[in-house]
Length: 348
Image (cartoon, rainbow, N blue to C red; front, side):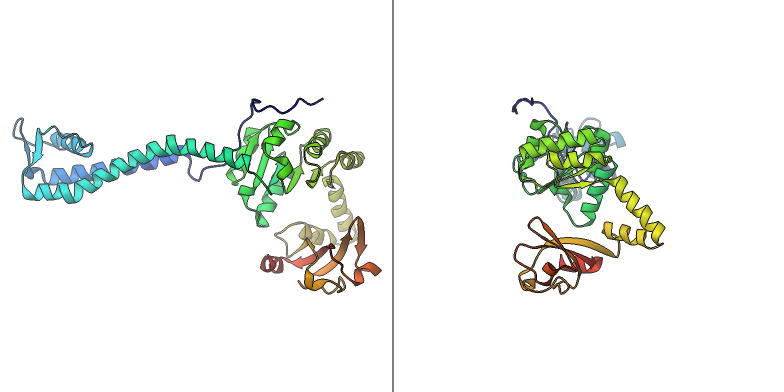
């Protein structure tokens, strides 16, 4: 029996990769500040005749470096000071803007590494609480990573994808792709509730083992009765169990590989075309969509998109293009068609 969800349960919160690594951001900021300080040192040294050292009357290079640092930090002890009009003009026109720039760099660094990152954690927590219409990927192995890559290539915004896995190494790959990630066990109620599974657009399950995937499907269906679930299983016997657990779509990569092999045995181009259909990078692709208002009453062979209609899903019934029911499209029909990839890009 699963334990009830508790807000005090510990798990890693949702996160998303930053555009620039922390070490690179810090290095760039410090380099910019040092470069500006070096410019001020050169300016002061070139105009050292306009400075006066009230201690010994001689302005050395060390004095210039010292004066630059106290000038940049606005300390100003008064032991070295500009006395000529040109030096004062340089301080006003050149050094003062650089002083502000250096201050802003250091203030910005403090903001970025303390305030901004705290705000980012707070923002991601809010996003996590308001997730809706997102794609949840449970398991980021070979199948899960390929599915995410294909989704992104098809135009899905990575920020609308949430990946859950127990491997930090695999999550790092998903994070680098721009996805939201969470390190947790996908078979636990509290972790699925943390990514608002009931508000998801769809859930993709690929845990690597059939028993684990089926358990996850059971848990997801318990928490999200109406969310579409697709699961990967490798044993044919487990396909029925996956459907009984609540999966809407059951994908067997072993069977698909068998189809490709069988197709290649029947003809050299059948497997090539099947692979073409399966990938958005191919010349053609399968598209599933609701029937359009201007297509109602028309046959499946006369789609408004110009695609080749293959099948209609009318409630629980699947109607092939050769059947009587395909002669007139009806409200609520789901159409499966083949479209050229370029045509799909234009229609989307």
